[in-house]
Image 1 (cartoon, helix red, strand yellow):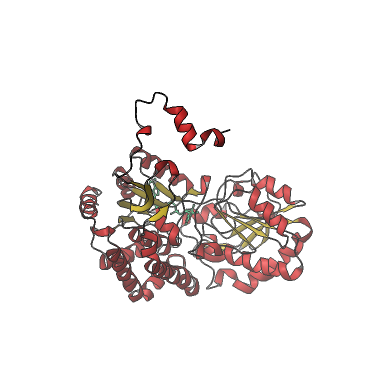
Image 2: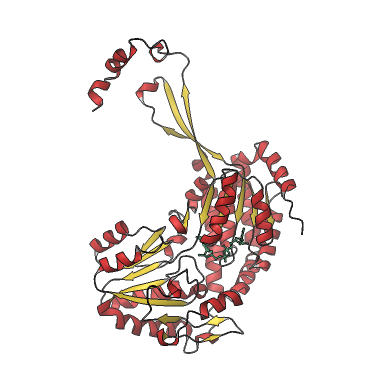
Length: 465
Ligand code: NAD
């Protein structure tokens, strides 16, 4: 496999330097073409993405087709206004000038992607990069090779390779790409690899957007039975979709002590309603991506802690939706992101107890709180740092292009979706434009005796403390 990527970078840089990709009509037409190809290949995208984890068509269609198409439509509609230079105020001291902020494409973007929503997590950053006027090179995930092949075909049909191209492969290709000088790197993957990406980017001072993982806590306040039922349904849906292989799935639960037994009882019923009495046979339960991850997950299943589920099939790589209780906060399952259908439950008496425990962990990508109490909601949002959060919902925030999506600290840096994606791939360039007609000599040397005059003129004596 040829891993010298300098020729393709050279071609992309030549195109970028012509300024063609900056043209707004060019960007809009590029997005329209991409949309047309995606629409044409909807059935193939759906089927290929379904095969990766044996995902149900409904979830694949929603996340891999609807969300990317919504993002393209939104970008096409808003692109002119997003890219228009924005007026800014100008302080009196700069009389006579005006100020504007331009959104300038970085240049060549490297987008490294993952396998759990393999089309969505690759194509949405591409939409943002193209909307912002960049060229881009996409490194797909080796763990979803058929989707990678399909993405390659879609990109080839939509773009000239000088504008956008795909490199299929794994660590070797990624490592070679990272030796090249890009103008921005957008990475989706684990926190550990995120650090490798950031180190490689630092050599060229390349800005990075890191969309990483984390241990997302979900806190459940005391709720009445009806509300608790709804909470349980929403949590089970967000946790067991994709067999828990969702970066923003709840990783573990903190439930108020008085309702813990009811929570477990309702969760047992809910899992049965979603996946039947034999979940390993359910068409709606996904498999784990590979044997390594499967073995890692199975190692978390300590018999005495299994409260619901716990069965698995090492041939089909499926693990039942599993609830663990009596887990110590220091146990292996709490040492890293679970990323599977296993949900440990902890109880708390006061909300402060839950907050203090959560704050001992790295900042999560997502935080979930189920409560009807507005003061407690305020407290949770205010006191627990997290990438994003949902109140009385699970994972829904990522399906809104009006909200920036991204992590903080160990769960990442920077955000995207909608305008936020456009901004992620744009440098904000301030331009101060001063009239040549007026020029105050006071600002120039020799400065002798000018401080007093300056203070008087601008009233600084009154303004400064
Ligand atoms: P990963 O970090 O192993 O791989 C991600 C990408 O990095 C792949 O393209 C892979 O080829 C490449 N890569 C792997 N090792 C590399 C190395 N040593 N040097 C350079 N590149 C390398 O992650 P994964 O298993 O693909 O995905 C799971 C992780 O991604 C989880 O932690 C999950 O939370 C996270 N994730 C985050 C988001 C988000 O939007 N924040 C979305 C999905 C998944």
